[in-house]
Length: 276
Image 1 (tube, one colour):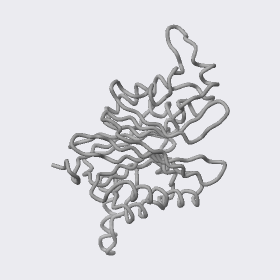
Image 2: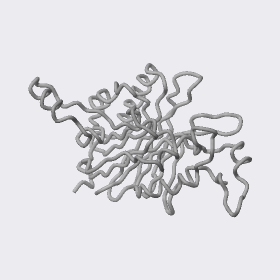
Image 3: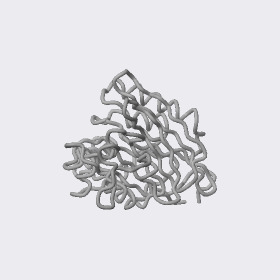
């Protein structure tokens, strides 16, 4: 079984500067992923101020959807799940999953580490053809100590909900700019990041590491800021899948839509009851 997945922090559907609405363009862009499953972060479930300001019809178009963003972005016949994390007087936002396959079950784990950042891990079980796939939508905190504790909660949640032989996809915005969490996830869960085998590496660096008896340097792709990506914040970790391809969506279009660039990966199941 092959599966195409994407992860994208959409910055609540507005531009980084002046909060210009981008929801119409984002809907078209998400459709271009042509993905079976899309992991979204900073998704508005409700925003009364933006709705009042941008929701009125103008020349036959609305610049803000009447429905929740996760339903608005979902292609036809896709299923959705939403994990509400941050709640305020005029609305709320969180993580969401869009799936072409039925979502058999979903649960949002509150991993907020302090009062000033509300964070969650959205766990969904997908009824993919002939097997179940566990998906975890992640958005970790801005402080390193918080991220470490939230990663421990993520490891605990995966071990408690997914059997060792069941396929797992963990994706989202880890805010892990120093890349201190990947080894913890690899060692505790047996996952690999999609760029572990595909990401660009220096041939000279690999040769030197080989002479020194060291393993190749593993690093996620650069995704932030979208205009000129430098920090490695967004990730897709998988277990039970072979990674056929993975790429970061670059270019002027993506730089205008959000402060993060999305990642799209093509996977092939190698573990579980429907592996062929």
